[in-house]
Length: 233
Image (cartoon, rainbow, N blue to C red):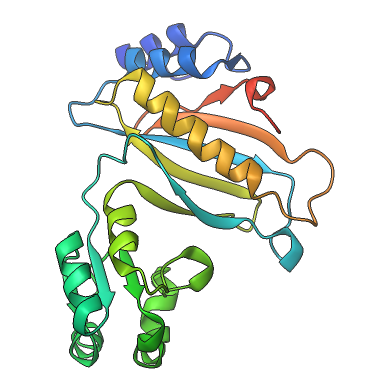
């Protein structure tokens, strides 16, 4: 059996029983103790749900606003004209346009985290389906990214709103902040994210819905969370 290096030995000693399920606050404290990198890692939550997203009535998808933000700079593009375009720019959109923005994206300029459009612009945006779809950037009215209120949509995107979508194996995950955040802010974001997932429980979900939850940092181990403290799980 290979010998553990000093860092691995320290991690093993601190983790102890890797089957333990932690309260969120205790897990956050332990993540800080286990941190070995110098950069500001992202704190990530992963949830194993009792759904099969291959069935339409078991899909879990939506948006949630994290009260303490994400700690990331979100780059937003908006398809709009006239007053709506001006409102989007005033709200902080990084790029606003119509056919010109479409052509810019067709040329390969797709470095955006969120794409928003007014309803009248969907004829233009639809021509970008093959580019935006695979990147998860296609505006969608169900997610609030096709809306006449582009000003609010931009503010939401910039202010900590994130999209969630369950993967094939029934797992859903997201970054809920940075290690530099306070434990209180990370707890608020964790609670908001988990609450949104619980409220998004699809009609076709059978049996136990929230089966497992884990917290980790970008480079750290995953810590199992005690789901008994999660309302509606």
